[in-house]
Length: 440
Figure (cartoon, helix red, strand yellow):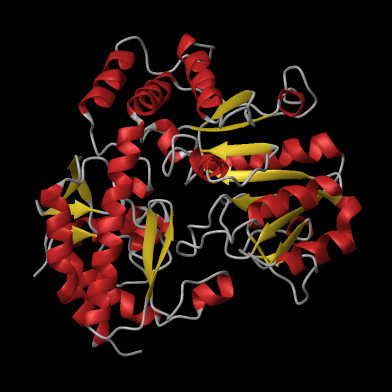
């Protein structure tokens, strides 16, 4: 029997390519009809048919404090009374840039001295790469297989046939000449990193890396690997771009870099990118870095970047409210909830006899249907991913919303309390049994 979600998906496919405005929303890897969300509050979302779910997507990360947090909503409403967009500087922009710079600090280490606000994570990483090329006068970019940095042409690249060969287009519409400016190497592989610089070092402008991979499932950097990236790049006159669009301000008050720096892994990226949490659920992203690099951006430098909606006052208001409310206690509560759920997830899958591991990076986690947590894209793909769809649907039928792909992180919020966590735990055994009975 059709419900409102089926009707909306049918209507959407008539006017929107694939019926969605971002591909993973189409449920392509799990099957079935996407849930069209009508509202959200705290740790729950409600779909167009009126069904409520405990949410583990959190708008793919931004809802750190929970959906529709009253103080964030009030900040946006108050900002809206003064105007929706100005295309001019505002006081809030200055406050948010200063707050970002001040948060990304551990001891005397402070990698963010200047901040440029933009509208999306894709725009932030695209600008960071242009800035790195402008700063070094070089063209080539190194990225890691399985890492996602937005959908600009040069980043939709796939590895070539050798360890340090120029990349191939990863999407129709990407010119081969643009893809060839990117070198795609294996993640967590020091030898691959050394080889690519040995062969192309004088032409490499930057290495871009997710602070912790979370778009091929959660795959944390091996101890020392992010530091090795920085040291190798700097030894060859290149820069390190640390992509914290997903991890920034979600796993630690200073992002994943801050989490590592606090644990003693001392390295300084040259440019960092932020998104999701930094805008509190509104369209806002940022890039930051040392003053001498960031000051190469227009209007005072030769690297051009512009945007009418950059620093939109409503987005800035949401970002300011979110970061001010994201206290150490918030992170402690989310970390504790993540510890509790990863243990419950492991126990349920083990009891059902499902081969699995639970990949963890800070408070980000997800199940992987293999006997050890993946260390790179090849290992992430080498799992019994067919088990996820029945697991996903069994959770949804019990009122828990998961990311509709096995290759996505699960997100908790500060609003996940005892009731919500208990509901998730209660749903896991049936979902694990569904995964156990799945067949390719």
